[in-house]
Each structure stands twice: as structure tokens, then as C-alpha cells.
Amino acid sequence: MKRMVYRLLAGAMLASLAPLALASATSAGGFGVVTITLVDLDPADGIAPSILFAADPGGFSGATVSGEVRSRGADGEGYREFKRIGLTHGDDVSASGGTALVSVGGSVAGQAGVGFSGITTNGTAGDTADTWTSYYLTATTPWAAFTLSANTAVQFSVAGWAEATTTTGGNPDTGFDEAAGSVLYLGAAGAGAGGELVWDEAERAASASYTIDDAGTVHGTHDAWNGTMTVSYSNLTDAAAEGGFGAQVKTFGHSAVSPVPEPATNLMLLAGLAVLGTVARRRARA
Image (cartoon, rainbow, N blue to C red; front, side, top):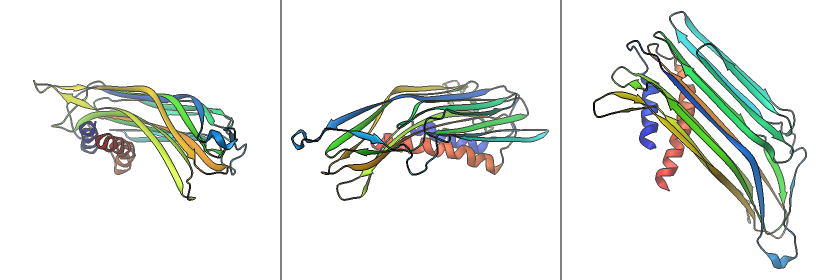
């Protein structure tokens, strides 16, 4: 995974002149319905485990879906940015953008209390002999604030999936390459026994760039992950405690033949690559 991330990073920064080629990079990811499990840490205290979600957690808005698409060729550069924000936790939010060669979109199904009942994201970047394209999207759930009973642990479990594919792959000698990825994140937090903030986080990712076979031929790659992610918070005190829960999915990709991306485009790609690098480092330490 770490080696794959370094290849993604190098390719994104080196896109330059290359022979005629057609390629595409695609990625997608999402979450399903949240399952909540309460565990009684002290059955002898006579307190039944319970969790109560705030109807209006401090004025926080609903889900946010935001992204951008970019294309650059002989006729200049095109850029589109979009963003949608729900007013309440129960609002469904979706947003998308695209051109003939690149598109990306995402949605969050809102749910009162826990904040969401599903997230989906997907994007595709294609190219021609003289056009370079990229996309980036983030789907973020609202912060679900809750009150947890004394001596109780809560677990949030969600089925998630991520997938990324490149076709042609690239040419490391010229800098032409494709890259794509999706990153899934869950987080839960609450007050610790000493009043400090305690976090539990989980991340999973799929990424694709290129590979080189024994004959020196460059091929695209495919990567996928699906499974259940879980985060938890334990209230180890004898009184009810405040906590929160949230999720996020990031999806990005690019496909380039000849144009050199502008610095702003490099920063957009690196935002996604940096997240993948964090995941790779955590896996290496595990």
C-alpha cells in the first residue's frame, strides 16, 4: 500500500508531454446503514444502558457534499466547483459536476439522530491526446451529538466499500499517468474519565495507479475493499457523558496525457494522496 501511494504521488506531480494515448481513471466509495450497540460496563449499578441523540446539536447543519472537476488542454483550462449543505440531520444531500471527459458526484442520505443512513460517491476522469482531467469530492455527514448513560460503551458499526481502477496506467519515463482512490473515515469521541476528549477513528482506502510487468509494459491497476468498520466510545464515569459520531468519504482521480497541471491542481490531488499516505503509514505500524 505504501509503495502504491508513493507511485501515485510521483505520477501526479510529473504529468508532462507523452505519446498519443487514451485512458481513464475511476473510483467510488460509500457507507451503508449505521448499527448502534450499547454495552453495560457495570451491570451492578442499576442503570440501564441508553443513548440519546440531540435533536439540534448546537446548531450544526446537515450533511455536506462538495467537489470539483478540472480539465486542461490546448484550448485552455476549465474548472467547476460545487457544494450542497443540508439544513437538518434528516435532509438528503446530493451534488455533482462534470464535462464530456470528467464527472464526479456524491450523496448522503440523512437520518435524524445518528446523522445518515447511507453515503455514495463516484467519479471518472478521461483524456484525449491533448486534454488532462481530474476530479475530487468529499461527502461529510453531520456531527451526531449524543448523551450516553453512565458506565456504558457505544459501538457504531457501518458496512463500507471503496474501489479504484485505472486503464492504461501511465508511462513513468514521460510522466503520463492515471491515479484514482477513495478513502472511508469513521470517528467517535467523548469525554474521558478525567474530562479529556477521547477519540476513536477508523480508515480504509482503495487506490489505483499503474504497474510495470517484466517486459517493461505499463498496465493500469484495480484495488477494492469492502467490509465493516467500527468505532466506539466508553463512558467510564458514574454520570451521563456527552459524545459525538461522524463519517466522511473522499473520492478523487486524474487522467493525463500531455498537459502539465497547474499548481492549484497539484494541491487538489495531493489532498487526496495525503490521506492515502496516512492510511498506509497506519497500516505499516499495525
